[in-house]
Image 1 (cartoon, helix red, strand yellow):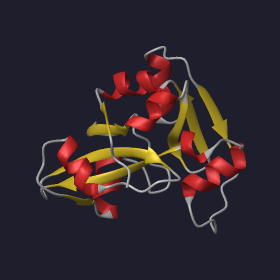
Image 2 (cartoon, helix red, strand yellow):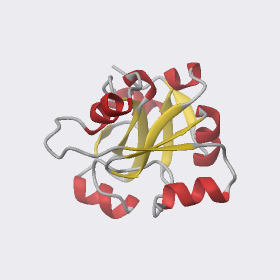
Image 3 (cartoon, one colour):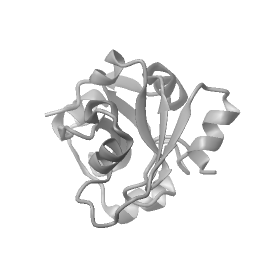
Length: 155
């Protein structure tokens, strides 16, 4: 059990765990999850960690079929600039390895924005904390668990 799943169970949030066999040669972790689980890529969200004003890390969740607009991410969190965080900083801060970074159950919970497109779905999927493991839950439950907010984050 990952810290993500433990947190969701502890808070008694309705969820469903999906597992698949990860192919390390696949070009995209998120698109691989959508393909192997038969879920439209618009409902599978990737967890991206950015550095805000080179001082603070934050999380942006966007569909795996889209790209994060770092300017919009910065604006959503009141920063002047955002840039993708270094791999080592992401892994150290979250406790997860790249390709399996969950927005839930991180070592230190980072401020989080979820692309507003998530609100149109009854449920979305995010990483459950390791490659080949996804968790499905209601977007509003995810926002509540994270103390996050919706924002327009895609290019």
